[in-house]
Length: 444
Image 1: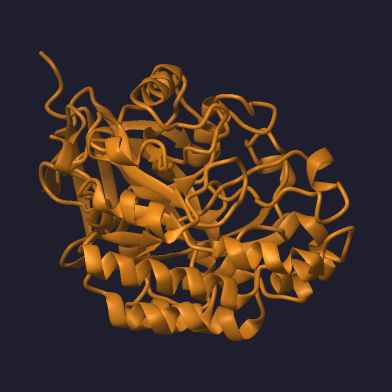
Image 2: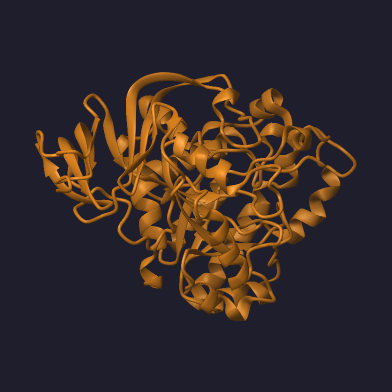
């Protein structure tokens, strides 16, 4: 006879909707089927001893760049999802600025084919918005495995760009799902490029792409979103000014911040890491970082996304501004945020809301983000007391580096369970890559 349960998580401190409870969790056919004391009821099923550990709903990283197709020398779907699994992340939403960009049904289907049998965690893909495909977005956003639409208002890595108000309005007017937006004002970026043209210190990245560049774009976006009644998700918010604007537009806008912007600050990070902390929008000074933390504490921030965007060392070593923007982050998201919990900057409950329930709520993910009966059995199992050093050797991303190399954190992911399967335990990937497509309520 088949076992009563496929998997039992034994005796962990589980983050349930009503609070923390020490309990067993029973899993069958990839779903949560029970809480309580199951004793030997697991039969021949797998048992993971979670005593002394915390069992969290599976972490969802809603912003990663895995570079495939076209840029596999930096990263691919196998290495990127391996990094996610090792970092305690159970599902990822992958960005469209690949080569070619993901702007059509065919390109999305190609990514789905590439992920099959190679993805270690579950995955969905954004469709990139362009002036040319704006009229088709209502159909494209409903395709299987589509996380939604991504729009770049300012130029970043790749050639996706919707910069002018007329085309932004076309994108917002077509479709109904929440649109994820990189909000930097392209005209101001072009005007201010003289600050760094011909070579400059990397710290001037935050001067070129200044706070006004972000705030101006976010203000334009929110005014149009209100007029068209379209839900938007403002990615990697980095400024105090944006936080003030966003407070008045909560009816249409949700807010993401990154662990990088919460952890690093200028000018120290540029002095220590040079172009390796160059990203768009930039790491800014402590005034802006504290405003982001106020947003976390006040409930203005809805989710944490890593903006995992790897480049090779050779590329990062180019003289600024020829060096590309972006850094790896999917594998360090959970350790960095657990360390912030240990330091008292946020509660574990708030972290779970930002990394599990928040992304599920924003994007309408079906059956994920909470530990409740019937939901998918995705778990991030962590040791809150473990002290570990983040090192380049630990990084599974093809780029092989992290700006947090040598940083000791308190709190560490010790197991990653995806759909009832343990895919990582104690820093080792298990079994075969069998990640599935994330499902969304608006696409069912």
